[in-house]
Image 1 (cartoon, rainbow, N blue to C red):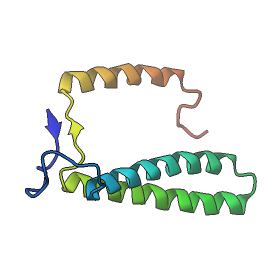
Image 2 (image 1 turned 180 degrees about the vertical axis):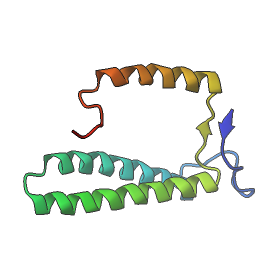
Image 3 (image 1 turned 180 degrees about the horizontal axis):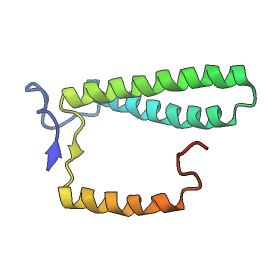
Length: 110
């Protein structure tokens, strides 16, 4: 089952070669995803505290821009996600819950 909003009523069923608003937003979303990946690396590898803080700020703003584009596309019915069945969610939860014993830190402060 897909989760999403209906497409706008005036949207053509067959798309031509020219870019429309949906194409532009898909391109922007792909670019924002690429930027967040790149800024994640830059943030981790920043060797100077001031640079780290600046890149972290840009990273946060880029993540927000990415979320805004996603929300707009979802609202317009141009982005759909698959709903997962509860047994599959439970299975995945149990799988990763078992990994907690492998963590080096327990989360408690001594």
